[in-house]
Amino acid sequence: MPLLDTTMSTGSDNPVLTEQDREHLHLLSLFHFLVAGATALFFSMFVIHFVVGVSALVRPEKFGPRPPGALFGIVFALMGAGTVLAGWTTAILFVLAGRYLRRQVHYTFCLVVAALGCTCCQPLGTVLGVFTIIVLLRPSVKAAFQLARPA
Image 1 (tube, rainbow, N blue to C red):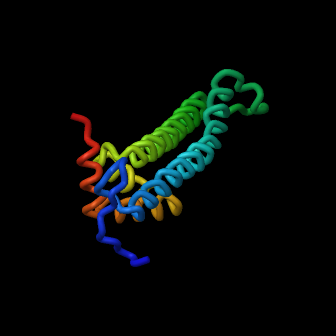
Image 2: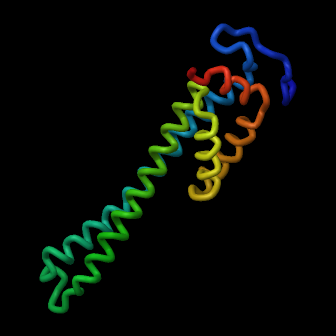
Image 3: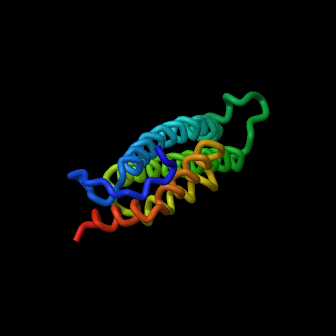
């Protein structure tokens, strides 16, 4: 099988995509779901920072004879909450991109999420983002997204 298949498929769901394009979009969709899960799981560990910060504010006596100040609790809670929120938001974006790749809609959104994955989710997001950009820039894939665009 050649690396770049320029023949057009005559499948019933989308006549523009080749079988290789369909397979690549399906695999990219699955990998977006996997990276989303890994991202959400990784950023969940920062909930501990939030809990430590809140406990420093609510029950400072549990930290020993010299408890940390309120500023410590506030900073820890805000950093933990912000990090978890950013990570879970990124995971949600990956899930949405996976769904959109499967349906071949929202081309620009998928391209932006692929670029985001290249910048912030090392190393899995970088690899996934690069491959997603490569597939999305194929003329047949771009045309398929334009044909699937809702009126």
